[in-house]
Image 1 (tube, one colour):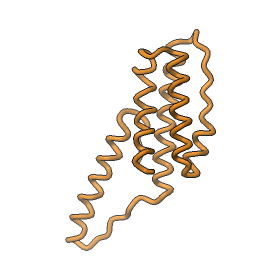
Image 2 (image 1 turned 45 degrees about the horizontal axis):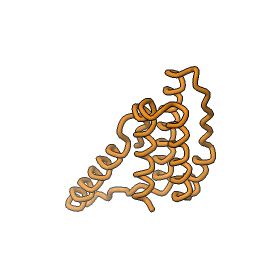
Image 3 (image 1 turned 135 degrees about the vertical axis):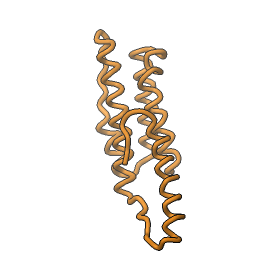
Image 4 (image 1 turned 180 degrees about the horizontal axis):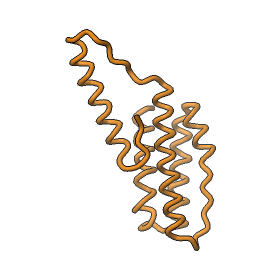
Amino acid sequence: MPQIYGQPEKNMQNSSNNRQQQTSSSSSSGSPVQEPTINDVRQARLALLQGVNASIEMLKKSQPTVSFNSNTTHIEQLLKTDQLKEAIVELENLQADVIKAFGQEAANKQVVPQIENLIGVLKKQL
């Protein structure tokens, strides 16, 4: 169950811990626990990218004089096709572009943590 806002990586870790606890308890009760499928993982990645997009949109609304086009369709396609290294490079480029357009302080408040979180999740999946 991906979360778009907040701390998705932490929630994914909590979800993983819960699954491990369920697995431990289900071993004794005999009921199986279903592991996430690759499609579940891909959907979680896309949900995190949606969070990045939402953060960028909020930043754009807070600074309407800044012109910034954030088309993440290519990143979305990379995530769908498990091209994680390429997606990380594109996310790092997006982060640099956001900082350049809005400034470090504004970007750090909303967008950078979201992008860094997604990059961290992807690195763990390599």
